[in-house]
Image 1 (cartoon, helix red, strand yellow):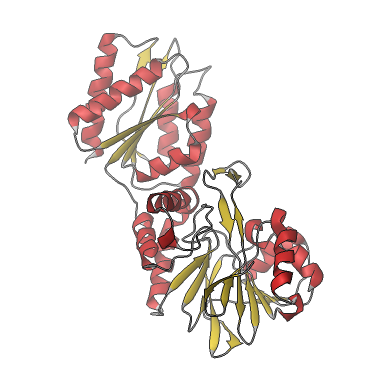
Image 2: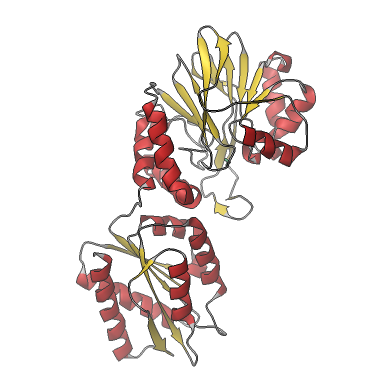
Length: 398
Ligand code: FEO
């Protein structure tokens, strides 16, 4: 059922309460998600984005209950990823000649996915589309935020920015608006989304936001493609994005460790003790890599000024869980953060050096060459771990 969001603009999306993993198995969605699609019924009828493929039949059937599909004049595809374009094949099979407005890269992504020669109309930043009753759609390319094809669409008079993924969250809710949901949950999902998806593109986020702000247009609502619509102080999420895009860090040190027989775990706890001894104010968080959701750990890395990564030596290297996490951390290109490594061993002890190399490669400033403990740490070694933590606390503050 369509739900009015302002004047002749309606939400026609899907709330996916069951979603637990997104992007295959790459992103945990503890609170589900939504795929937001919007219908504008002015003199012209416009559909902005659709929903993910599994919901395409349901989406089209629901839309048919609201309007004659042949009355849709324009389809806007802000982003071709299948969670937003997935219902297009179903829809276009019924209205094959309806024009699809998207960027030039959008045409490439859509044809790459669906291999259909639909009626594409390419747009670029500043292009407009008249939809009658004195209203226009204005397109703004958002290249690499987060795909080459991404764009936002601004509706004049109603002052709504349809931002697609930007400013969104994987957050299932029957409340459509930001002011109606639990604020802690909302901002946790926002920062997780930014940390795990947008971090590599941070320099573009800042530049693009400044470009949009320079247009000087009023923004009463930011209608994202996931989660809530920002209607109460919508610029609050824009301000958050600006802060997050500028090498964001809080006064936090995160210790990520894997352990086989608890030796590396004992090291991690002693290091944490040392950090707290040296700095009463810093937030120290410890996570067992094998027992913690990786996207939640990435979010904590994003918030940290420094991280410590620990793994026992297994074979000639580190645990597979640690390697998987570091692969993800490297791919996200964190900037302005410090790191060091540690780990227990029985004979060869390659782990700390290997971890240090990886952290260096991932762009972290290395605070120390790393700490090793032979077998189960002795009391003396535990004292050394505490001292290591004290050193780390001091270096992390420089
Ligand atoms: Fe929500 Fe990039 O798709």
